[in-house]
Image 1 (cartoon, rainbow, N blue to C red):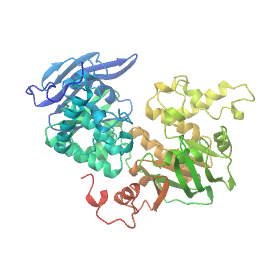
Image 2: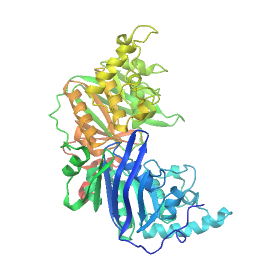
Image 3: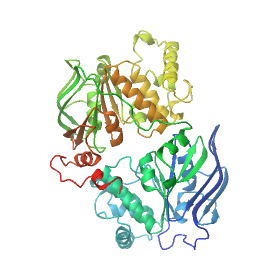
Image 4: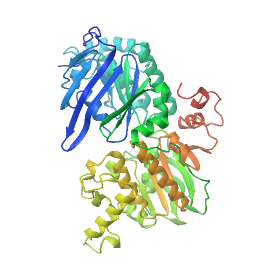
Length: 536
């Protein structure tokens, strides 16, 4: 059946003050007990956060609620009435919508077409679009979600695309909205706009379930928060009566350092220099436009910016994975020849290690075992054999050492990498690159999708390398991470370095303005996030 329209979706009078009640939910995937007797109650008209480490079971639990998975046992009640949710269309008919971390939009369709797609109410498209346009106009004004219905998805910002996903759910009659890591690709300003929308939804009686690993957001926007650990629900707290330290300790099972502890940098000679670099994407469109900067030994240069402004192409070019159109990359005083299919190998041989932004697509072969990924790119090194013969015993010994040093779980070198959680996959890549003792480490999104315990560990390792005299170029969309780790911050917008900032003095608002292409030296005060207050 088609997802039901707002006026026909199941909307009987609520029989309970709870929008969602889950009782004794169990779900196994083979030997993995992903959800263990989970109880969860979400009050109607509230914003409820769910946090937990990677592999804690929170996504599995929400997938059961949204109908992606079926629970092995347990009870689901929506507005006090018990239901066996069979699929996502059933969930939508019950008023449950979900906005995924990676948007489910057709790039060359308009906003209106994306909203209607799959929810057409007749065999003729034009009447469906006409009725949808009227309903979309009502929803946009009621929930402060203005977006041009005739704009093509690929032509609007990431923040606006997220609004389209929310409008899609509301158009289908969602009363309870699940958002999975919604701010991961947003600027600070866009994140502020999103939270204003969520507050409006709450004021209009909607229920929001927010999955996020950002404790600052939990504290700023939620009414209550549930904490999961190792497949179990360990606590549900009123947000106003807790703090980030308590939540983090519940998540990990131990005290967690939420701030990066580091001493002052002691920069030495320049190890990496980029001169007038121009890089194009796969379609030949310039993405890096004459960028120049340098990184010295013993310092971390952080590049901030909204995803899609040239950072990815910059890292890929410096590491030899993408050809340069123009410009020079100099390592240890020697220009690097990075062109061709073996450019990355030449960069590694010259002392540059690279942790790519997308660990699964570019950092790992997920069908390979952990020990095979642990030597990926370095398999021709002398310690792993000579010629065509691979010393498997030596490779496995090195992998076991990496697992121990970086606390990779489970500690099984023969397990396929696809079966490790995202945080542990990241540790496998980090161990492989960091343990090569490079002169320069180029690292993209070091903690994307990584839980608090692993973030703490990764940050310590990066600082350790800096203090050992390595030059580190760090790209992250997380401003808190950039400000905590970097000794100098460069901001990229539309392929250009638009400004440099001192992390000790730069406000989030000033950095956010630069990320939007506005130079912080000329922008009026009072427009940034920091000046407005935290997440207003």
